[in-house]
Length: 615
Ligand code: G6P
Image (cartoon, rainbow, N blue to C red; front, top):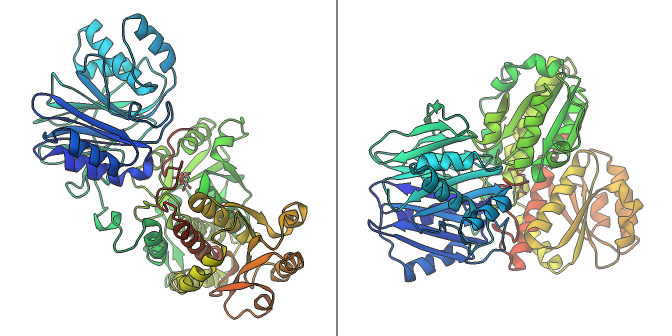
């Protein structure tokens, strides 16, 4: 993980780098650092902690002048988060300075070799080894920085997005990428370097996304030059025009990004189906599916790979695909799939779901499935991300930037895209009547309004949160389409409030979790009218007779559960397969309020990162 930012041009580099790092803190926030070239020397400040702490340190200890600089916000892999292990790292001569996102797997053997040659190391990081390897190549081969970087990278195993500059040649920054993302913003005789476009979006809409094993030298007064790291071949930069705007990546009056993103869901869901769902014409238009329809309709099965919240969206999709389109589906954690020698053939379609489009395990699973001949389809939020580029075809979720580490609108928009795909395939395979298909389309169009309605339960949820904020455990139960929602609800609570929570299929409670139930244990039960309602009611009774506290998510107007539960939160009625889009909302709000009441850092929970580019 980690976020990297760099600037070279005519503006002051420091404010661009600091602001950019703050926008990239979702990628890691253990420590941060900045290195600036002031015209004669490099000034470097770094510290354990967040970018705000770096700001304090830099502004009181170094000169902030200069039009060239690099900065880093870290999610520790090698070496504990402390000042010394923070980036940027100097080479032994003090001439080179580097920032790095990724892991150099063979750093220990390289380090031993460099120590034999007289190098010393102050940190425990793989990055300090890399910058010294570059310096050693520069010396022994007598080559310029770009060439030295290329030779060095051919000796390393691992993943990287790096930016490095040389005090002796301060008109260029050398960048390279393998496995971790790297975008170059192209301005008017100025360049921005960043892990994603958010640090430079207010300065330029033009960006080049480096491909794996590509490097670039960004030099003042020159066009960007791309090279393949392996064979030195020249690659031509594809300058993309970005659609993102600044407002989208700021808090807009909300206390936290997470809350803003929860409230954005009606709009985000609408944006997801806008232009795709044409209810009046009775069609769903999705270029990525239309162009490869036969791959889907002839597929033996669909394998879905993802991690975290995206995996939960995959589980919801399994129910929807199998129920509507009658295509067998398997859902796998990408990290398991990639290492278990799965049976995959050219008759399989693999759908990779990822908000960031950068998750290392999901990316590796895609590569594996491609090697085995499967058709690979991506469902990503971040446009131009590695997964979006690595897949054969795909559909963006169009949720807009999601900054809060706990995923919210990404989940509901992923479910929306997957529902559109399932409906399209169901229609194509003749599994839904025209009337049923129309019913789905018009109900999907009602969903943003119904999500709005579900959000109205916010004040009630705040009251419930206050009752349970000191709980140490929590159980989430759901059946069918709402079983994955229970998992997601539990994940949200764990992630941001650090309360232990488990999600279970409601009927499985009898096989273990019921032993945990006592008067201290809040149990959140999703008990909407459709979907085995009576069975869930029985489960609620079982909890009640063991004195558990019940918070039930019910369909508007419900009476039966109301009499049994300690608290009920209503959501509007909808078609069963669409209920996750509504039942998720109160669970997101509940975890949000509990976390706020416990004084937790909602947007940047401890130990987590939004984009997990290491395995
Ligand atoms: C991290 C994030 C989660 C996310 C998961 C998968 O763990 O904290 O919110 O669900 O990665 O990320 P992806 O970007 O692939 O959806």
